[in-house]
Image 1 (tube, chains in turn brown, blue):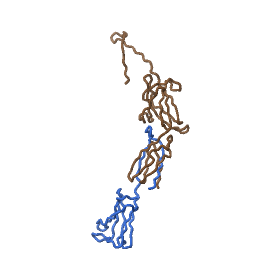
Image 2 (cartoon, one colour):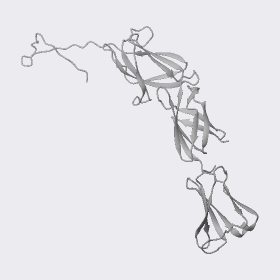
Image 3 (spheres, rainbow over the protein chains, first blue to last red):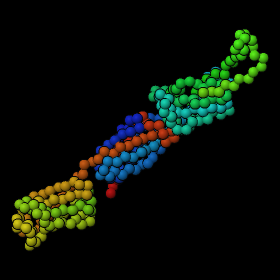
Image 4 (cartoon, rainbow over the protein chains, first blue to last red):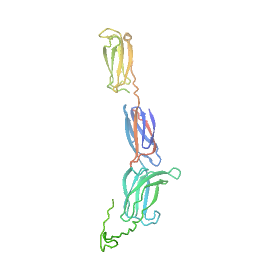
Length: 183
Length: 115
């Protein structure tokens, strides 16, 4: 009876294996529920092969998006946040909506503890009509199963415009309407 | 293990003529062919009594054995092959089921089930 211990690094691992059917268990995966491994069997043939496995985590991360980035700030009322890699260029899973209470809840995220936290990355994609999106990658260190992070979205700043006659310098246009479109 | 479609045959070492085809019956593991005293084991072309027994596995692996067919005059002779196929590399991916993120570090333990 053959046994193999396969190390997975950054989502992949490989092992030369004798042909046969194997029972598979996860023995280590920080932040994840080891019993959630799927599938739990693998059949190796005499040819090279491959198999995709999944694990599920049990943590919950809540983003509270408000005008101050701290508890008690005025919440925004819409928008989306998505999990990404450390660069923010690769998105994982579907974007999570920010509710009218300013909260975006990510379920089933991996978590660690104060000694060995799990680092996750997120990016805010959109905000509501009255606020600016938080720029850049949001880094979260998960040190407990349930965690809340506060994210600041500043209110739209007041912009002042003047419209004058192009020929007669300084002559204000009595009445006009300008339309601005976001690029 | 050896698959059922493994085949064995002999090649005359003097004239290279292919000779007897030895069939592998289901359930023989490892397979063997009983050469019974009195069988006409010599090259049908040149009458040589020394042959190579060649066994070809389904995956292309071959194994040979030199056989002096004069030995066949013993009451019984077994030609036995055991194929130990080279383990082939198996590649695994492990991702978060919800977000499909690659899991940075993990260990999977594989235990072969009894046949």
